[in-house]
Image 1 (cartoon, rainbow, N blue to C red):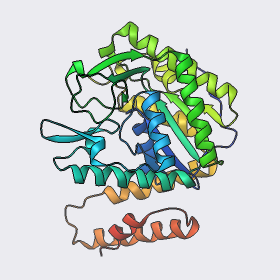
Image 2 (cartoon, helix red, strand yellow; image 1 turned 45 degrees about the horizontal axis):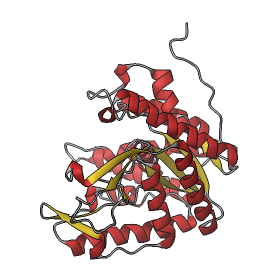
Image 3 (tube, rainbow, N blue to C red; image 1 turned 90 degrees about the vertical axis):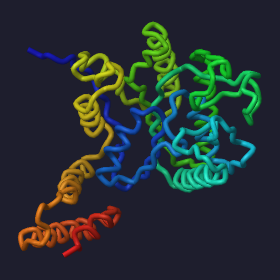
Length: 333
C-alpha cells in the first residue's frame, strides 16, 4: 500500500551540474536547496540581498545586479540607532552607515559579476503580499508608495499591505526575465514556490497568496522556453501532508522534509554525472567535519594523509571542484 501520493516529476531537459554557476533567489526555503548545493561544492551564490519573499522584491534585486547599482547613505534610513536598507535583509544593517553601504555594495558587485557568468537562476517565491511605504515613514529615503523587501520591524503605520494580483506578478516577472536575458543570454530559470506557510497573514489569505504565485509562475513557464518549474510546494503540501514534517512552529518544513525535497530536486534537476560526484564530495565534506579527541595520534595523522590524497585526486580528476578548504585542513599533519 502506498502511503505517499505519487506525483509526476518532470526532469529538466538539460539538467544542472558542477560545471554550472547557479544563482538562488527568494524565500528562506531557497537557502535549504542553496545550502545543500553549497555544502556539496556546487558553484552557487545565494540571496545577495538576503532573504526575499515577494516577486516584486526579487525582481527589483535581480535588476539591481544587472545594473550593478551602487547604494549611498541617502538610500538608507535609521531606526533605533541602526542604519537599514529597505531593499536588504537586516544582516546588512549596521550602526555605522558607511559599513552598511560597503557590505551592500560589495554584495551587489559580487552578484553582478556572478550573474554575468551564471547558467541558472533558481527563484523561490514565498508570498504575493507586498508592503509599501506611507507618509508616516518619515525617516525613509524612498518615496511614498515604494515597495520594500524588508520592514525591519518598523512601526506598522509606516506601511500599507497589498496582495499582488496574478496579472501584476506575471508582468513584473516577464519584464525582469527579459532584462536578465539581455544581460546574459545564456541564462535559464527554475521557479519554485515555497511550502513555508505564512500563517501570520491568515490561513485563507496564505492560500490565496500561494495560488496567485503558482498561477503566475506557470503562466511564465508555459510562455518562455528557458523557464521551468520544480514542485517543492506540492512535494511538501500534497505528498508529505503531515505535521510530522514541520518544525515546532507548524509553519516551516523540518530537516526530514527539506531532505526529501532536495532528494527529489537532485533526481530531476541535476545531471547523472554530478549526482555520482556528489557522493564522493559528500564523503570528503563529512571527513573534514571530523573532530579527533586526540589529534596527535598516528591514527589521526594517517586519517588526514588519506583524506588529503582522496581530495587531491578528486580535484585532479575534476578541476572545476573547489576543495581548497578541505585540502588545507587535511594538510595539517
